[in-house]
Image (cartoon, rainbow, N blue to C red; front, side, top):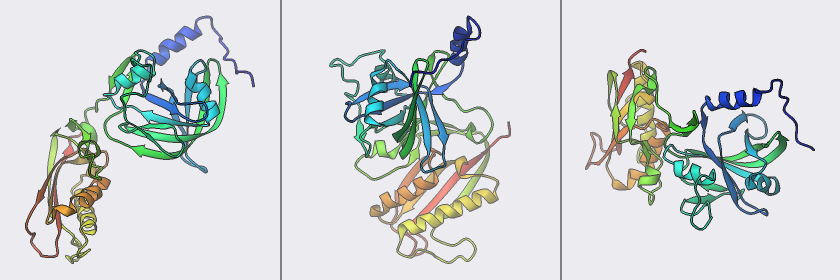
Length: 316
């Protein structure tokens, strides 16, 4: 099928369009592919969700027809969208053709993972979407690819943004639950790669609002005071975090308002499974965290205790 044309109703509509789009903000991603046509990748800002429903969730990306990656995706029938972190400008520049690696290999020096589709996945991306090609259509100078998402892998950090013809970092607006300034955010997958952890944390939180102090919670039902999950540190952690969520809501707060948590465990072997469970509750929150191994808690059957400090943001 020949490429669709785009009508230009005014002589200068193209320049107006380019100028107008430069004022919009978009996440910066690297789209990669591998297969019979070889490995290829390119930096894009034109990526959007299509639908979360149907047989698979779907998204679309737009790639210039002159890009080698465009042709490779058509032959390989797979691609991966790697949403870059705001400290990944070097990756964006390399795959965007602004700078070249000394041996010409765009992928060299970065950590990549190969999943089922074989499209390279950046291990430290904010999030990746591994896709199989559903449809492709050329419109003007670009191919529009719609992919069926087969795997979503979430990482840490904040997405790199392109706006006003420059890379940008997102900053939370005053007011709302994101008023807290969480400094030097990281994920424990990066800081403890030898351990199976996935906790979004930060080094410092600057918060403004009403303090909420949550008493240390254990594997105990809030209403009956009965101990639960005897001998199971993960089950007790789940109960403790459920209690914290309930108590915060009763105080008019939310889990995302948590600024500081302290985790007490009675055996260092509990650390990984306990921290993983806590990480499930606090994904994307990035609190400050302290962990302690203690000889015992108030009852012999209690293996884990967690306390939290939250700040309800001031109204805008």
